[in-house]
Length: 75
View 1 (cartoon, rainbow, N blue to C red):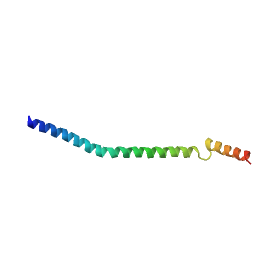
View 2: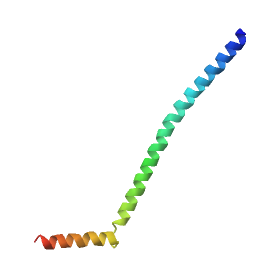
View 3: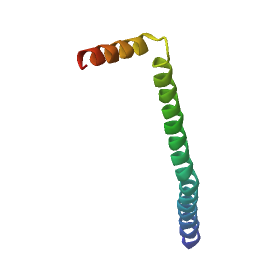
View 4: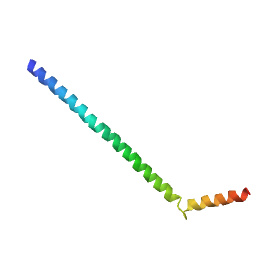
């Protein structure tokens, strides 16, 4: 009985230690992946916004027309 209890405690201890080590390795990796996804998303959104305001686009023409109207009104 004593030997079985010692083996049981050893297995439980091993599971706890392995779980702690895996968590210590995977934890920072998870945050690294999360930060990488945030950066990629930001670059994607920046590119979309920049392209939507490029010269010749409908949005850019609307902005220029509004600026022209504002300047004419506030002379």
